[in-house]
Image (cartoon, rainbow, N blue to C red; front, side, top):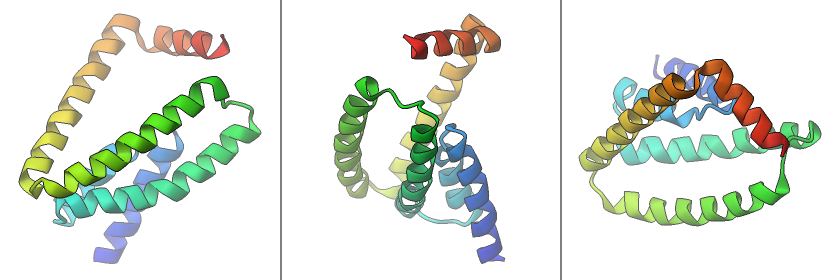
Length: 135
C-alpha cells in the first residue's frame, strides 16, 4: 500500500509540476500527512522529484520557444542561491516548526491567489500574463 501511495502522489506531483502549478505545494502535505514523513524528508523527496520534472518541462518549453533568457537567467541564479541557503536553514529547524511555517506559507499563497482572482479575474489575469510575456 505504501508503494502504491508513493506512485499516486508522484503522479499528482508530476502532473501539477508539468503544468507549472508547483507540484510540491501538494506533494509535501501528501507525504507528511498521508505517509507520516517528517517535513525535512518530504521536502528532500520533493526536491529530488523536482529535478527530472523541471528538466523535462524546460526541454519542452525550449522546443516551443517559450523561454525568455532575459528573465530566466536572473531568476534561475537567485533561485539556486536561495534554494541552497533555504536547504541549510530548513535542516537546522525542527520538523514541527518547519511544518508550521510551510502551512503558513500555503495559507498566504492561497489567500494571495484568491485575492488576485478577485482583482484581476481568471480570464483577465491570463490575458495580462500573456501580454507581459510577449513584451
